Figure 1 (cartoon, rainbow, N blue to C red):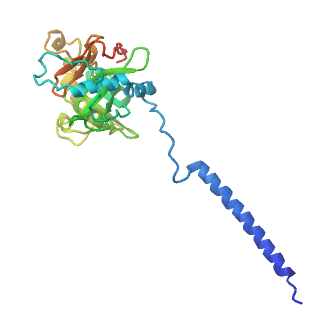
Figure 2 (cartoon, one colour; figure 1 turned 90 degrees about the vertical axis):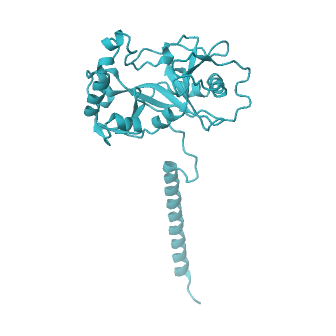
Figure 3 (cartoon, rainbow, N blue to C red; figure 1 turned 135 degrees about the horizontal axis):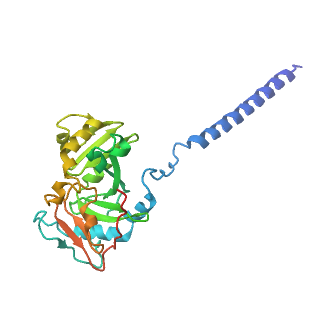
Length: 292
């Protein structure tokens, strides 16, 4: 009779090794999935931006009914065409301002940075942290509404948080501000409506106005850019002779919307003309913190 005990023992040892190998593979796969997650898993929610204070309050603001209603009133009212010197037009109140308008959402806000007065004056060093400062947050709409785009502008509220400062025609502010990437800053030179990207200490233009502001150059150092803006605005800063003699309101980061009465919210058109939302339907504003 043929002895099969050796074959059986070999089969058992092979089965045992296969079983142990299966366990090792399963445990390793489980450990790997616990780190990277399955391919079809829904990614975790992105963390709130660390460089924007009270960002959750900003999210709450752009998702609020009050802000949405203000945007709807703006979109329902034709922008005045009389120019910047024309009288402010009052937006009529309606019980359901969004009724009949296409469905839209307001995107998460992004940082709107501007050059600082100290950088313009030449008293601040040509360093990113001293040259550029967060002044507002901007949000665009998820879609055009009746052929129009709009930008929601939030300003910091005294004591913390954010409030609606303005609604503007066009989504260009939010589009340019959204071009910031890890390791870069995007900022605006509001006097010429120029938008720039700052990579370490190199300034690059993002639009035609910025290219003109750099004299047609593809990029300049932050130090050279400081010389350009100092030549353009240093003698026009608040308190300068140019300012005090009434030729201009001077260079200031504080936008005109914040000079309005706390019971009036200016909704500005792209041409510089303005609409005003007043009365019971107004989202009552608090003064922006003087942090600039």
